[in-house]
Length: 112
Image (cartoon, rainbow, N blue to C red; front, side, top):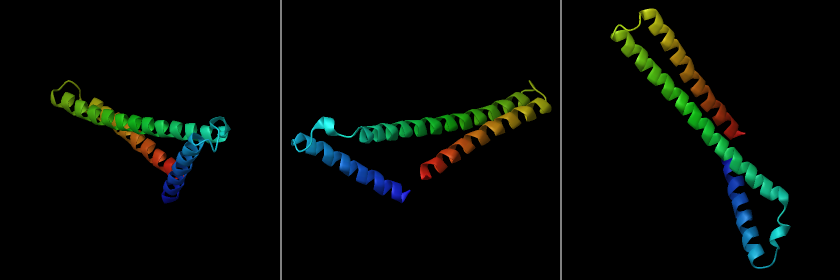
């Protein structure tokens, strides 16, 4: 994580110095390597993907929580029996677990 942080800040410094260099005419803008631009785009895409995954995982956990509350309320108001309540609870639990797994997967991917 620290290594990644150092690398990304170094990368930012290089990018800024490249940009300022091209303004001074030391380096032409179209000489900026395509690889550099592609790496930037790739980094941005990964950031967006990470945010979306985290959001999805959060939503799944929220839905699981809501489902548990709903199951409990329905059982209390005698709309469903204990068996249906337990099934809903199990499904809600699975959703929350999936959300947690997605978040952990995302954290593992960030470490790499």
